[in-house]
Length: 60
Image (tube, rainbow, N blue to C red; front, top):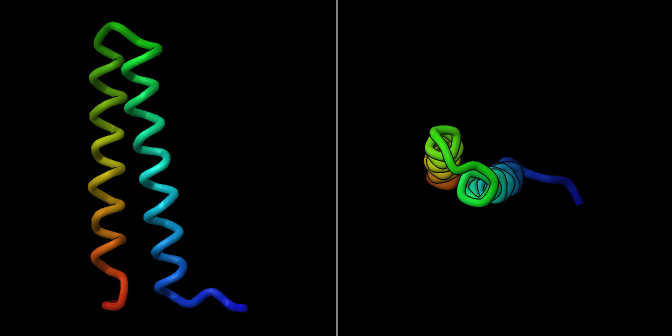
């Protein structure tokens, strides 16, 4: 069973969401200074990129 372009984008979206959640949780739990804001901002950025990947499904 091969992976077509929609399957690849779906997996990319899923992985980006997992990484984004991990970065936000890492920023909340581990750090209590300015680094927490940075980790949360990067996590939100991963969510934005995952949203774009999700929007591209079926269009590329």
